[in-house]
Image (cartoon, rainbow, N blue to C red; front, top):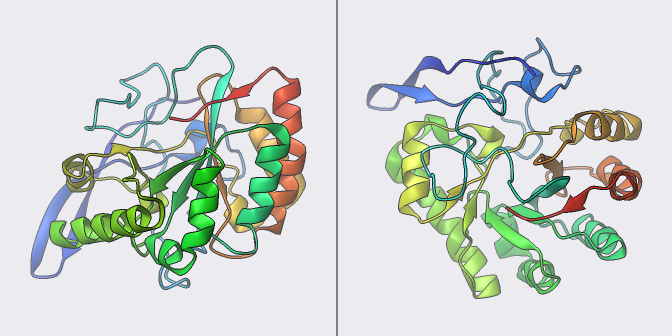
Length: 269
């Protein structure tokens, strides 16, 4: 994995111009050859779903061992890795809940006795609270993934706080619990986003293995990416919402037993 550097960019904000130092995801840092030197296309779970995501420049994020790795208790930086022993990894499932795909994912996790973290969008939580309770009852963690999956870097602090707070309210209403983890849409962090996350009492959660399953590259591509890039401490990104996730489900059927056979065990951040 190559060494990245923090980038700076000017962000136009309604009513004025603010300079923010951003934390960007570098696809090359994760060893994802399919993503190198390419702008990331629009994420299917954006709201509106057709809204384009901005490209992520290369060289944005230092790799593991080059800097502080976002441990719990350090809200100034997202968590990219877990630290729970040799061959411990984390599985995160984003953009749900989905009445079609979340139950399929839950059945697979139960079959292989894997505990995961579901990063849920508030709008979907409000629409399917029973499904949220089912996820929680199965012992999985639920993370706040904002109310409507907007790119927070472009929003003023009050709007960021509203996106976070409304999602937390929906999750609490459904489960009776307040989420302890927060994942920014697109992995787009800024000092303002991190500050609002800290003020909400949540740990910022990122990822270190991105198989780009949301782009539906094919089951073999998803499986191959995860198996190539997973190592001790990896946080794996997958999706159960935001569109057709049949490839993700099919890939999990293959990748979960393979990782377990390779000696990996799953933990939650």
